[in-house]
Amino acid sequence: MASARDRVLDSFVAIVCEEGERPATLDAVAARAGVSKGGLLYHFGSKAALVEGLCERLADLSALDIERMRAAEDGPARYFVENCQFVGSELDLALLAASRLQQAGYEEAGRTLDDTENAWLATLVEALGDVPTAQAVKLLGDGLYHAASLGAASDVRPDRASVDMSALLEVVDRLIATKPTA
Image (cartoon, rainbow, N blue to C red; front, top):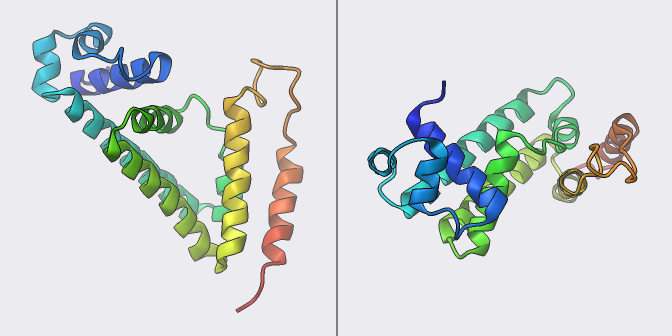
């Protein structure tokens, strides 16, 4: 079973993702987590502390994802594109919650999102040795993530075209093969 701290943070993320930032009050988060308000305040003394906890979680999850990118047998570019359909994952929910918090004016959430995006791109640049090629791969993955979040890769919207990942990864391979040499 998850710790009380994790349940509180999970509840905060869920409310922000499902309903937005304003309904994510301390009382609502405590109720959803099944803890007393005092129990919530023991772990997170304010809503700002909840936002900070979410940002720390997102930073940890993105660092883990970058480790996996670097260690991927097929390389970081293929890994990034192939794993951009992670809708509903812990990383996806942290990204979505941080995005909604950024829109509500929480600057720390915006900085954490920027750090995450920059780290993914830096990892691709490091692996590919070319900024425009890395940007193209990043944008391809971002597009897949966007399509997946709209339901293109699930049963939510079955009329949307599905993605042939094998064919798409062949495009990634061709893109990498034609990048300029130093």
